[in-house]
Length: 144
Ligand SMILES: [Fe+2]
Image (cartoon, rainbow, N blue to C red; front, top):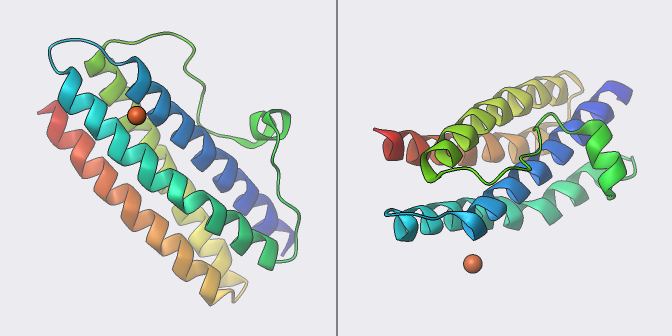
């Protein structure tokens, strides 16, 4: 269970960082494709943000406390911060790579959850994998 708690916190902090990056891109994107990229990043950050509270409460239900500070997120996240202002296409490329990372992190969490027999939690995590599969499709299609 200890390992499941740790993996869940890593996935949660990574999901929060992914959300923040998509929102930052939504704010800062510029150029000829402003309208469509602003809206694409908007759709992604909103979907992820809406999952955050339920994600945290599901982890609490596993019997552990939630990280909720920048210091703790920074210790746990596997999604690197972006402090530069990127061009639109670079934003899509970077978010696509991060999205792939999220899928790997969530699959690892799903397996740990199944091993621990936490099927309800696995079900939630499977939903997050599905959501990131859709984000990946939209980001990839935008780059073509
Ligand atoms: Fe907005």
